[in-house]
Image (cartoon, rainbow, N blue to C red; front, side, top):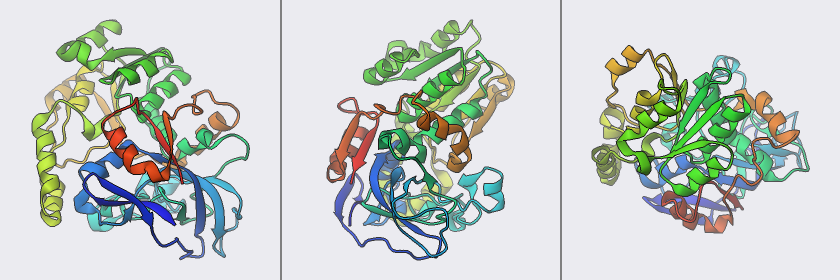
Length: 394
């Protein structure tokens, strides 16, 4: 089959790899019809080579049609249409029973002290072959894939793999009070969807912050009050406070993570680390890595006293400095974590099945054949051509 593989820093290629096969009796093989490019994939493209091997198949946002089932699969049959959550979660352990599918005890990567395995995401998370490919082996066939109806286009459902549950959890964790205010820092695909979900769930004021004019305009078209970081600079937090009665938003969502701009020293350290031999780079990342933190620090500054900061952006540092005095003094509530994809399906399926209130159809800015994936990675990393969300057709 054809698949996108990692070959080195900023080097991903589409080539021929062996087809996946049924290994366990509850596996299914899915023929991929649509698969997404995630902002988290850029961390693999740029920084996390120490935990990848040439030939690793990337991608964790797939959907498609069941092609084959193992002998113990009872709820799916060939021809069924499914979305595959990015957590590889068993659905039956204690953690999954608590709705913490990202901490699945069956697939936890204990060698690295990490939570559940993820599709297409490094040795840290199980080195499981990903979904930017023509076919994907999916374990736990009766409990992991999400069956979706025939009819509406893939664009309605593919975001159930990551974007929708990640954004939904971020808003849930933000605990925005009825008619309250929420600011979203970073209007990439997750931040954009966070703003849509917050408005859908009854937030009275939704504020969006970004650097990219096209992303600001896209959010503004859906009623978000936008603030361009380049327009306000160091006065941004004060401007947002002024827009929220002088207190600051009830909640702030950091949808940026370690891609944040504005911290040259930390960014430089990350870049230097990525050039070291893999073994040394891995040790440094695990023990002494420091993230660029301007987005998180802005969120902590901007949120009102007693408010909540919800972090959905991915961070990878182990020695990040945090303004603990300010956090304690402001009585900030802080929630974060990898999305527990399967937990939110009952909330999300009606929003993509009975209508499209979140605008999933048309959410993608680019749809491309998988063969053009290397160009898409470069375009998305450099934020060219208004790229917010890219979908591939294998």
